[in-house]
Length: 356
Ligand SMILES: NC(=O)c1ccc[n+]([C@@H]2O[C@H](COP(=O)([O-])OP(=O)(O)OC[C@H]3O[C@@H](n4cnc5c(N)ncnc54)[C@H](OP(=O)(O)O)[C@@H]3O)[C@@H](O)[C@H]2O)c1
Image (cartoon, rainbow, N blue to C red; front, side, top):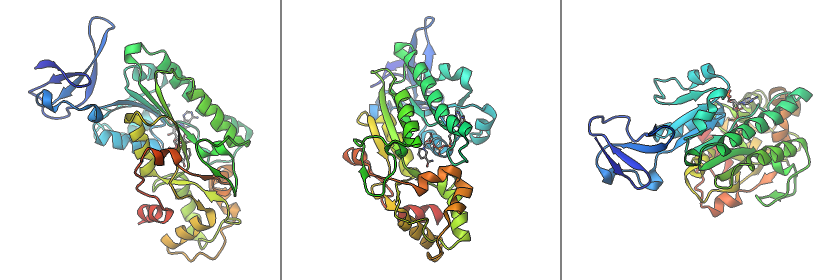
């Protein structure tokens, strides 16, 4: 075994072990002095290039709809993951050690040790909004996001300089812009004046307190379409029950993104220094709700003629149905400038891929 210098870190060439390599480890040498070494297989020429470097990513909300998929992706590429959760047992059941060897699961008192020494943090936590919004729940929807984000930012800012994560990717939502049937919103557009806009502004403001030397990307996420969660999973039974017709006037805008594209965008943002500031996490072709319903009806094989009563959707999405029923047309100008390769540009293709 010999220590040698790699392109971005020290490379630790281990000639004995041949599996589970390429995992960065923080070693403490001489008391508190921290160095990062990479376990690599082979000689110095096989050390990772900066682009291929393995990351150590702390993830809040990792047990959720988006977080789960992000962790799967990072794990498949052998990055080291630290799941920051409120419940170890829940996280352990979602990420069993057999399938996710090496993953670290930490409850809040241990978050400091996880964030310090991570190369990046993805912040996705927050109380679900698809519920009935009592005054207490509305408070929790806002406070949970601000509280977790503030905590993450405080831990990043208070990390020792040589162990501070270099990147924070923090979720927010297209609700930032408020709702409109006529306007088009890009990253430069001002915020709206409804409750969800206020939540997003304060949520983003908490993230913006991160130190200047940390690259921050705020992803304003649209309605995420995926198989095993989110609004779509709840909408499908309603569409099966009725005949997949329009909801309300059908003119409301529906700014969506396929789960795989969102996860790819977060993944890219973790490692690509060009991804900074506000980035709309929406597909290039938002649709009016009428078209979304028509496409959904067609993919599900339901004729699209019987209007789906709003009340049915509210029964499953609660007041959170507002994100579907009162939408906004949001375009991903920044992602396009960055050349982000959307896999799903049209809602029909996204729905087909999800429901086939
Ligand atoms: N899905 C969408 O369509 C969509 C659209 C726009 C924005 N977003 C935002 O993107 C992020 C991820 O979305 P998602 O759909 O994956 O969310 P999700 O499935 O509801 O998961 C969010 C995670 O947040 C944590 N959490 C829940 N309640 C919390 C509380 N009171 N305090 C602290 N943490 C709490 C939970 O993790 P633990 O139990 O492990 O702590 C949960 O797994 C969220 O912030 C969401 O607002 C999502």
